[in-house]
Image (cartoon, rainbow, N blue to C red; front, top):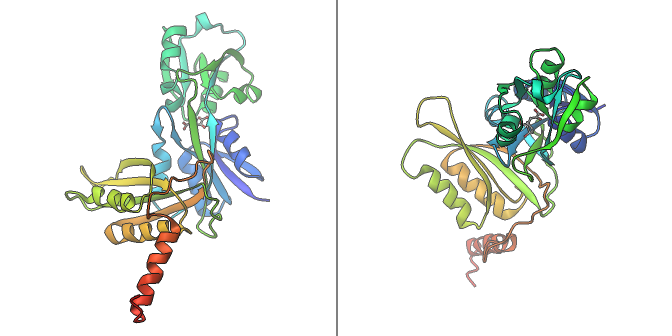
Length: 302
Ligand SMILES: O=C(O)C(=O)C[C@]1(C(=O)O)C=C[C@@H](O)C=C1
């Protein structure tokens, strides 16, 4: 049976995403790094991890995990609406809450709610929302900000539901595999790369210009230190399209000439958005231009 590592323990948002993305045995790991390492080592066939949140931005453990060690590719993605529940032990009321724990991304998404509803509670970072629920169960903290499903896994009481400062917040999750056959293009796809440029004037702008020249729309751009010293960065670039398309293949080849490039996959977009194709930048334009060059090489200049 297919085994899918996910950022656990049981009851995280990532577990829900993993269930929506793949069938098989779901195997929880206590950190994003461990889930990614599991698929890399072949302990599991795939790994499900969060990659970005519409309020709090990139999940840096996932970005660093994708840039380092053996390459992995994203083969699918899921978008989950994020609203939280607050859980406490059965004998603890909201008025008794002195400490509230959760994943830092979750705490960042409920700052206003906590200030208004649990103003005297100290905020404590936990490894995940479900790890916070376990710590509350074990008496370490008074309340946890969690995915609503967590209450099904831990003997805690819900003291608030639908908690979110930004009502339509979403997190995007990736299903990662070891490199192999890529998902087929659907017309609504996303391609991801990580680019390491040399530290000189215009290096990033040249990469982005290669994409802009080809009418390719970015969907995300994040910088992470390459850990080699100040000023040394890796750029995570997501854009519309699939590597199987001529225009995307042409763009990847151009990027590859200019920097150290790692391909992180082409997969269907969860939101179904189709790319807007700019004039003279459609796949057929790339194909007919390449055909023309070929005929010129053969002596036909018509
Ligand atoms: O802790 C969890 O439940 C997770 O799945 C992680 C995570 C994240 O990394 O952003 C996922 C979704 C929410 O935005 C909060 C936490």
